[in-house]
Image (tube, rainbow, N blue to C red):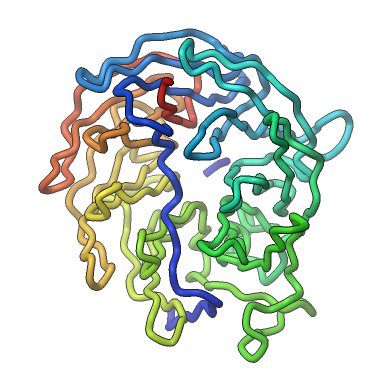
Length: 401
């Protein structure tokens, strides 16, 4: 979508697991890159490319699925048999909803076959992930301001929503972008007991209790009874960010000690630390922009390198990738550099399966740009354009069989 005080986040567990970067089930050295797009212009859906791990070259396999606005893609690792895409639309079969579409992956050919699609239970779905069992899909609906859960069947099809919950709480101060709740990210906790939701409109990371046997969310039942607080008549547990931050996406350290939240509206990363009392507290807020940068900018993606030593973030407006080093002990970030993204409006980016390269989807210039990652410093060296595709907004690697 478009463009502190001490803060405690009460948890029922300590550890998090980092979300998979979509490495395949087995390391064959051969991979397919799927590209999700916006279909308002020339694009018709999902495209794929064969990826040469040694050279970094992408070879086009063309359009592999016609579908509306597949703006975020994901697979259930490690098998990666099926691909799921959100369809970021506001009207689905006459209802105020987007859709979620399931595909079977033909990994040897890089092709997709659609299995089915269902309503996303809210308008403009923009993020999809999975519970830790791989039995449920979790979807954030941006304009709908809600999150929903969907069962996944053994044949890859996706079922109708088993739960849909509207985000609630005090709105942020940005009247143009925070006029209502805007769920932008959802992820299950390591023990599969809760889900975490970044809501851009509320300046919060919300926590919902998750019932993995029924596929339901419960915002009214606090994680720890004695520590809840009341908002709008309901119990919520949340990390509150500075007003006007606009939390968009989250990256978790692999050991669960730190949470990194990118703010779309103020172009920042807020770092939260997990202390010995099982609370998260804000310990740092750092800009993703060059010092003295002016003009409109919207931060978009955030990701920790698989080695945990570096963190990357994309800037739409400045058209850059911010690079930070991570102090593994304190969790704090230090700016390494901001480098041009090689195109206009960089959104999603991903690491190649070896973590040696960073590939960036530049939406408005219609190109995918590759960078080599310095293993010592995290710095990026541009290799060049590796693909031309209309309105790329999501990149997903899957291993060939």
